[in-house]
Image (cartoon, rainbow, N blue to C red):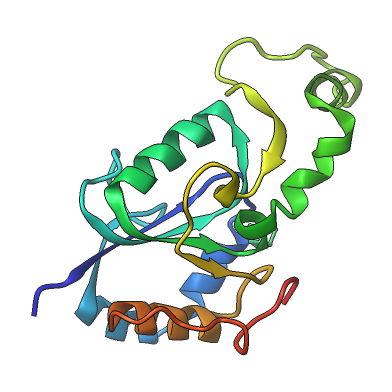
Length: 177
Ligand code: SF4
């Protein structure tokens, strides 16, 4: 049986959702019989591949770079999963939203740094005015709340998607779970 192509990525997130994914433990082996992990922080692929069947996206959209990534991912993915509360609602990253972009940069790089207080001009992706959930910019097929979603939930949802079914996640998880 041909394996489905699975990708995972984290954008404006803390990696906690990916840690929960790894907590699937030995059931990862069962998943690996059915899917090939083609792109992820866990593998070394540099560019997001074409024709991905399922992509788990952790984190909100916080930068112009995130926007470019999510648009490419959407074009190249059949089923896009908003993976965790940050992807679904912007959650923790949205805590910067009331303060505005310039104030956040000043607070982080100038007021909090006694040694070298300056806002970097290189290697700093341009911040969007607000951190926003994925569905503000692209179509999302499955919303998987939780901060992070539990490993059991992730496994059940992935198992259903692999079987070609869209799972009802409501009985499985909740915001902040
Ligand atoms: S949903 Fe929670 S665990 Fe996942 S990236 Fe956001 S803060 Fe981290």
